[in-house]
Length: 251
Ligand code: 13P
Image (cartoon, rainbow, N blue to C red; front, side, top):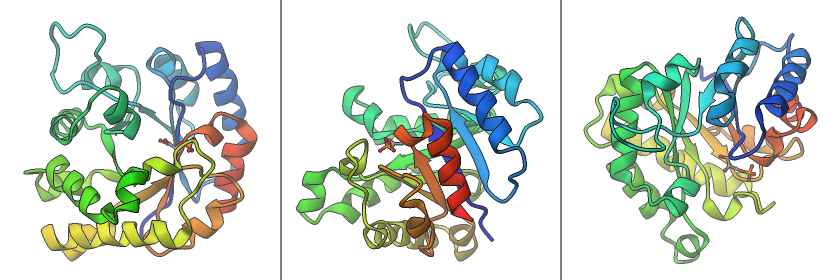
């Protein structure tokens, strides 16, 4: 049985004091909830202090990216060991904003997954098509290429320890959510792909999150789909009421 996972991607929002305020409020609000796994991914600068606050709570901590090298002259980058040291246990990899604005490729995604897992960070690997690709009916082709190259040469143990997030680019920050049917179609495709490449067992244990304009008002329908196991939430994760509302409405 797959446990639902709701992850908040704060992107480039919140100073340290703003982050601490939100986390303290979330912690209070979610203190009794134990049916859904919850993770928040603040900016790097807030990780360590947020980690102190989350210590012993039922909310996990993730980062939004990492570099694949262990250390070195890579100005502006951050390593898996540094994230671990700051208290993260999850890391988002290959978000479409990184692919679009920072030229990330499926090859770098692959290297980052390996680096993250070498330090026991759980990767949340993002895939998804642009509007143009969807309109050209190339959605599954694009997602398959991202899976094939992003997960290249990964062994079953590695697949078992990661999470996939399907985020159609056209639904991110646009208020335009994929319909539950559109999302389910791709989630099912991803699960079947894992089944064909690996095994039934791995595919049935894999958590596949949906991301793109998830809100308290649409989570129920999305989570009701057989292959949607949670959400990667952007905008609505920046406020206590909307993020807690999503978590509440999962049940
Ligand atoms: P929104 O929820 O703001 O559409 O962002 C989704 C996202 O990109 C999460 O990673």
